[in-house]
Length: 203
Image (tube, rainbow, N blue to C red):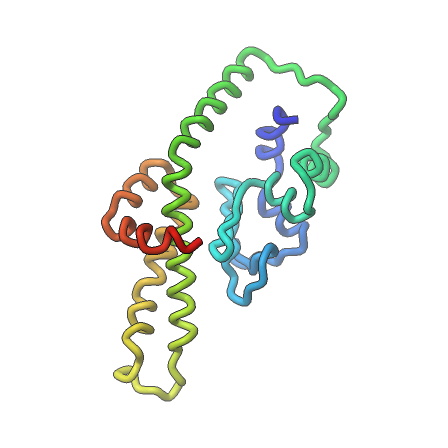
């Protein structure tokens, strides 16, 4: 069954499967279908064909989304996608892989192994940034001033959170969508190291 993974990911769009699940995307964002929220924190990345929720931290490819949304296992998700998108996969037929294709799969397998070496470090930073982003959002909601309040009376915590939240969301995007070198540069910055130390234990 595992040999169908790349074929499925190449032929099924994350946007298509999310919208077929009844989720209304606006600018590739929506409220997360896996936890209750009022402010959209669920996003899809069409180019990389993945999804991520900055609220609850889950993410993955089209197979993982299908598995979670329909509460099934890997095989069940593959069968659902095969039916929904007419992929033509015959589960009782042995797949014949040409030598050139075999080399491609081996290379992809090696790349996956290499990526797993770094995934723990990146995951720790990603979850810490998400926790900090959520904290900033809570501060903004808590201290949001009345419409008629003078700017000079705004709480300092509110003003600082407004200054920080867009930058932290940008950092989250790098950890989700960036390449290896972009993530590596980010996790080595002093600012992100401090955030990780403070928030990585709060998951």
